[in-house]
Length: 333
Image 1 (cartoon, one colour):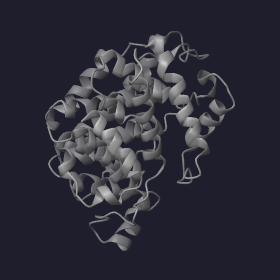
Image 2 (image 1 turned 90 degrees about the vertical axis):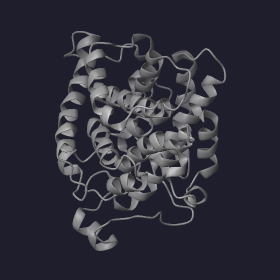
Image 3 (image 1 turned 180 degrees about the vertical axis):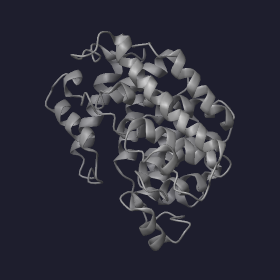
Image 4 (image 1 turned 135 degrees about the vertical axis):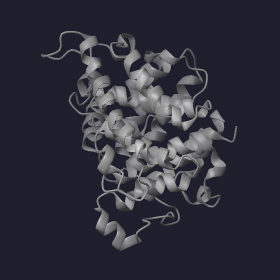
């Protein structure tokens, strides 16, 4: 298979860089600045990414460290990810409009608080989705471990059950595409996973995160997340039943500022152009919502499906953090 780990991790960064300049622009302003087709090429040398790629690398490199010293357990990986997230917090390059949820949670981690106290319990912002795709690239994990670890990396900052469920679905979408699943089968497979996992709470990994004043059980807690993901998958199915490739994808599946909409709209952009990676990230970048986050997910999905050769060859030397991205891709290709 054509370097799908590299294709996905570089695709994440390419979409992020392509969508960063349009993140806070509406469609008329995007059209005035870039023409009707929106941005089609990376800007700058290097082309700068945002906190989405920075934190994606934090998850990926922490995962590499943990897997190099087995067994892979929550006790092993949690302090590694914690350290990586705090390092990101203090990185002078962390000046790319990072999300408030990630900042507040990482400040709590930096202060030494237990992560279940540092996490932002009611946040289901998209930040945890953007960084989870490396969990779909690492081989050798059981489905249960991939699921639990995907939720844990989300829970360190975003404590809402929908943030956990959407992150798991994002990681599995990448994994299934790498394993050869046809893109047309992806929405149904994700829907089936929502039903299968609806009351599965990974207590060994998540501890007592579920405990809230109005929640009676861990099963009730996590079910809310899966139900919200099912609702947005309904919107994705409706959009794909009558695909419109030249319209703002956010009108159909949401602006992407919250976890389940980021998943759905990133998938929407990819599934509109499953054989054309550049068009998939262009569609995400030329959108009225959280353009960099939508495009980076579309890029991660497209690269996992099509591999590194789907991207313009010259982009690999122009993207910020090219060496770190290449290390991650090489480890899992």
